[in-house]
Picture 1 (tube, rainbow over the protein chains, first blue to last red):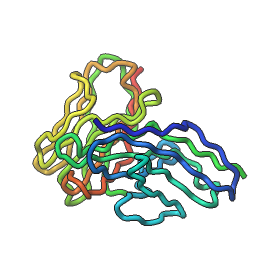
Picture 2 (cartoon, one colour):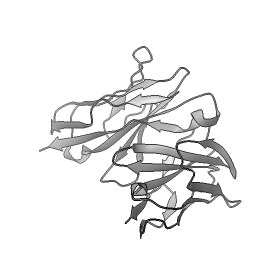
Picture 3 (tube, one colour):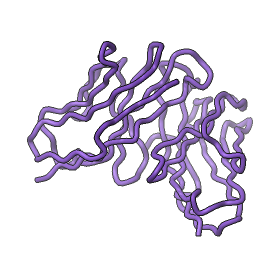
Length: 112
Length: 114
């Protein structure tokens, strides 16, 4: 079974402070991990995927298979980063494992 | 703009009624997914289609059904609606639905059941 856990429902930081949104997963195979961002209940936008190892809007995430984590980080938070962030996992063994399983999300608020 | 189009954007209906949500995937994408987003349950996977065939089924109620047509658009039918069905319903698409594909989401259809 696939499971994604985002332990923080809410995270509040000040502008310019570092931010880390935690994501842990449970999956027996080789998963693909993603971060999606949702502004004001609009559509989900892909922020990062671990296989591309790119940095979008200053965010980075590293897949740690030992700790089964895929934490999202940004060194200096901006007010426009305020949004809901979802960690998602896709399995590798076909069928229903190819769906995206989402965590419950973390609402990030960046205060001025 | 993700290229995934959903209609209607907003819908208000009464309990017991039936509604149909429509989704047009990105050009060239063969796989379509439906998700339900509610405040208490978060994002729940409902069902996935690939080139007209059902590929995976999630937490979809028996009152709900979906299909993907030959032109690849998809419809989600919700019947005998209850207050608890009020949610944001997302459609998403990807090229093949397999590994390595990015999944792109539409704007969603807001359903309010009164």
